[in-house]
Image 1 (tube, rainbow, N blue to C red):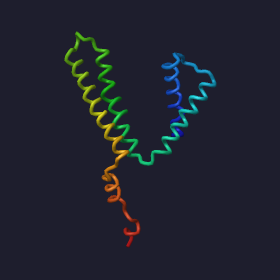
Image 2: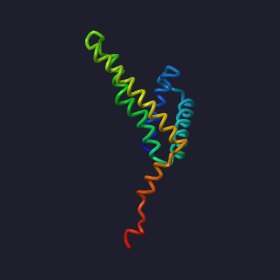
Image 3: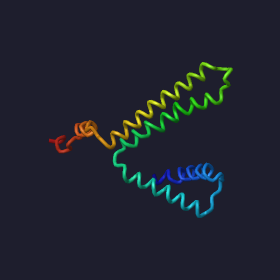
Image 4: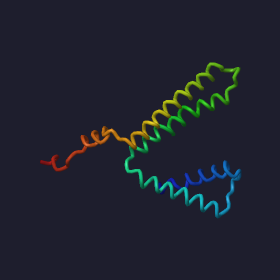
Length: 137
């Protein structure tokens, strides 16, 4: 988090200022407040998440499908003229909708798993733990 925070903070702060206040340059006070809050919330999340499985599960349910399937389908639909490829445009909408529904279902499952764990992951984790004292006897 320490190495990527300045890059992510700059991009996030710039986009936020353009969307909310329609400006590219913030005042020094706003710049410091927004950066501090963003860094604070990032540190809170980094300290609270104790299992990388949660991070990968949430990224796999949200960011990866969005960047890999949904956004390209939306871009294709918006860029390609309707007369040129009407069937491909319909397939792009279908792809975006199906992947979006699957991602939403996966996100709901991931959130449910965080609050009501079934014990399957701990069972697998316990089976894989190896006692180092048993290896050299």
